[in-house]
Amino acid sequence: MGDRLYVSGLPYAVTEAQLHDLFAEHGTVASARIITDRFSGRSRGFGFVEMGSEAEARAAMEALDGTELQGRMLKVNEAHERRTRDT
Image (cartoon, rainbow, N blue to C red; front, side, top):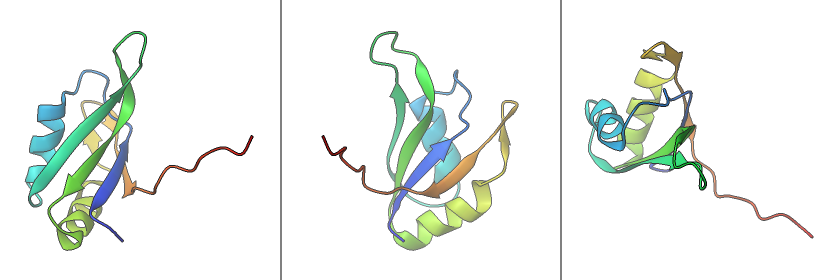
């Protein structure tokens, strides 16, 4: 496992600062990024959080996976490198 987490089920109104603060309760947050629609600029409901260490990432994942945030259920997993499509 690495130190980067994939977070889905994010409420659309959540900001990157709120995401950062939520994960900071479980360790050092190196970065927190919410993915937005390139045309509308609105949240797509998922993002990535990079923790300070693998142990902190594991602790955050165990603590936050399946919890509720503003009425939506969070899913927190280890992030994997994006695969490119074969053409």
